[in-house]
Length: 201
Image 1 (cartoon, rainbow, N blue to C red):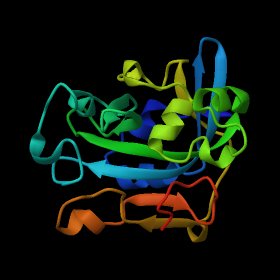
Image 2 (cartoon, helix red, strand yellow):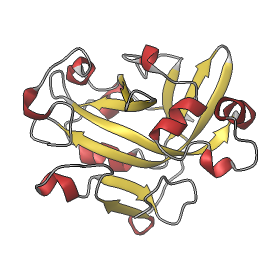
Image 3 (tube, rainbow, N blue to C red):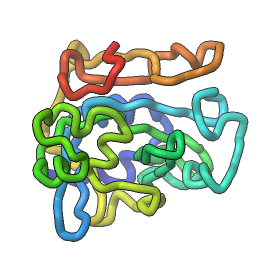
Image 4 (cartoon, rainbow, N blue to C red):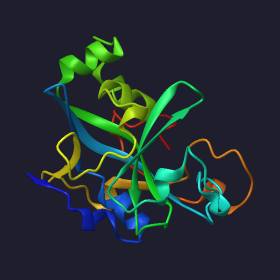
C-alpha cells in the first residue's frame, strides 16, 4: 500500500490522472474511524476552456477558488444545495483543473457507511454517485482544501488495476449546454461494475 505522492496530482495532464485514478483507493479517517473504497468512476474538468468546469472562462469565486491551488488538494462543493461533491485539484498553481470522484466500490468501514447512508440491504448504492459517496465517507464542505498528503483523507495505490479494455471513456454526466464539451469523453468508469453511478453508459 502506497499513498499517492503530490507529484502524481501536479501533472498538467488531467485526463491521464483521471484514468490512472481508476483502481486507486480513496480512504479517510474521521474520528478515528476508517472508511474507503476503490475508485471506479471519475470525471476530468479542465478549466478555463472547459465549459463544464467551474473555472470556465477563468472565473474565480469564493466557491471555486480552491481549484486554482496546486494539485493534490481536495475541492469540495455543494451541488443543488444538497449533495457534497469531492474533487481532486490537479496541475500546477492556477491551472484550475480538477477531477470529480463519481463512484467507489466500498471496501472498508461498510457498517459505518451503511449508518451514514441509512442503507442496510443494498451495498451497491452506498457510494454510487458523488453525493452518495461523500455522505457514506462523512465528507462535506469543511474538508475543502484538505491536502491528500495528510492523514485525514488520502489515496493509495493497492496494486489494483484495470486494463484499457475494462475501462470505458464516455461523456460526463449533467452537461447542460451545447458544444463539444457536452459530449467529450472525459468520464472514465469500470465496465459492468455494479457500483458505477447512473446513467451507466
